[in-house]
Image (cartoon, rainbow, N blue to C red; front, side):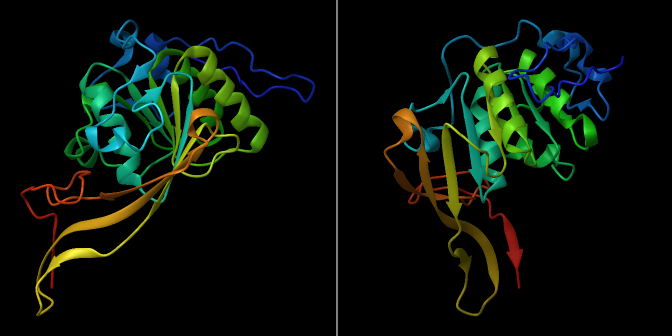
Length: 245
């Protein structure tokens, strides 16, 4: 299947409609799926204006969830990016990650992402924009692993808004609705001798944005907590993440 370019001329303010449907997404260059999404994705879209998130993120997001049609940028934490996908995919939503060639499906699964509903486009090259546009037509959440220029970014955000999808950027994005900026802190778990397990890392997440997200929010989280997932400080978890020393 040939993919029609969705880049628009200078005198146009919107994308042309994509030829691609979810049933044909597997033909896009570089597309593979965690477990054969293709046709079944059509009609698997979760209903409602908000997509759910893990409890640790409800107080961080202005609507206590991911508002359909919005664009969210996450700066400074891949774990936070994947954590945004976990609850929604666990409840039946479909997600895609575009332009993150080093993303591991096992790592995503360990963070709670339902990988049977996760599509990967690791290296789209020049097809990044049409791939993202096509995925926004059929899936609930689309993560973009690298930035695009300002005008194209605004067009993709407009497409997400029109289709009712959530566009998530793993990095800065112009005109974003919600920005989550993660500032790293200290790891804990090592003994006084410098040996042991790195079990937790406390981070500070700053939320800003437009509309209801204008009022800044700052929250402390563990990214990761002792079990390797997002957690709140003080929560009891098991399983050390990384051995050091």
